[in-house]
Length: 573
Image (cartoon, rainbow, N blue to C red; front, side, top):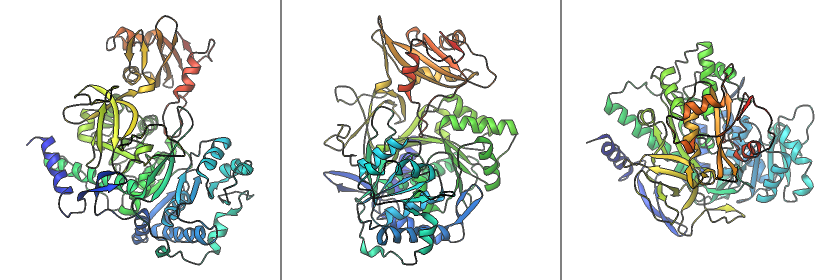
């Protein structure tokens, strides 16, 4: 039995019969889906279960520490406030807009526990962007920190549905209608969950897309969607552990008190599932005021962090700092990547820097799928660093040609997903991305090999068509990105009168490096067809513009490169 067959046998054993991860086909709306029959019934059930971890640490924020018992007490109090002070009923929208403060997690848990639809907003948005989303979802309540409260209150007249703003950590002046600490301190009643029955297919969240290509859209996810993502991740971990034992790998035992450093925003679908799984596993979440590699290493040493997930630029910065300081980080078991495509160089560096004692992983999903639809663990990832994994047991995946037919192995097509964790649609919008028979069209071009491993090729809209030839930006970025002087790179298409489009690259160089366009062309030429090698470069020390999810804002780069006299980055050709 080869490893692919062994994997299938393990999954079959875990998901058959009456076990914890047993699957059964259930009708959800018009379609049938494989669902975990023994999954919790709602996010409320999961979040309330966090209290049984008692005096174990739940959340550390810089130098603050909160146990699970303290966390659950705050959740119970705020749930009561939502119902009895603010009149929040089942289906009402409760929005969150703040940095990764502990109050973020409390607000989320309380909102979904009372049957509200929680709307985590992008804390990087401007005032007009926040107001637009609040108006779109008709939020009844907003929980926000000082900066976001100030931005929204200035536009309150545009938000007639908004009953109150609860301000977190206001500083000397309270700008919200209520201040978090004060209202929680005065609440001594307790919300009775029996008064609000919840069903797995009730709406739980509206997660807005990153808006890299137009107006953000609110993907509506159910309790079942979030719980499916959590269950899938647990199944994946069990399968990977069993396969590692079969291979005789030297695997460190799981920590008794797992601790994760949260390197990205909780409002993003790459990190929100950790909030859910933490209550199940007793995971200790370590939060930061803002990302800083030096501070991150300090916290990892102090808190004995054993896992983290980081977008590629953050992972590179972290490893740069580890190398600079010579820190060993003996507690670290997993440094996973997510949120954006990694490179072979980055994954190889993880294996080399930590001498094989730290694993890695990645997955592939979108806001519209409430997290990953597939995943790949260390053993396979080190061998296939450009893959994003194989489908979870509940994930249905198609790779579809432009004519709507499925392509064969190793052929390029659009990824289509269906499953119980796929959003039921967009709030107040119908873009055609969700088909009548329940498939979500991702807009991503992928290829799937004969073993089921999927690799992302490009976004459909980002493919450069140069003189009739397709140039996949991700392929060119991968090649340019392994130049030793390149810190970060993005490839875009710019208009060209003769060829239709031309290939352009925007490059961030590593500190102290000197890199020219000629260097990069020479580096890329042996591995890329001539029509794929960029003819235009912007090179300099400045970071590429990215959104909170770590995705490059290619609209901004196209405008920059296509400007007759773009700002100088240090070299242009």
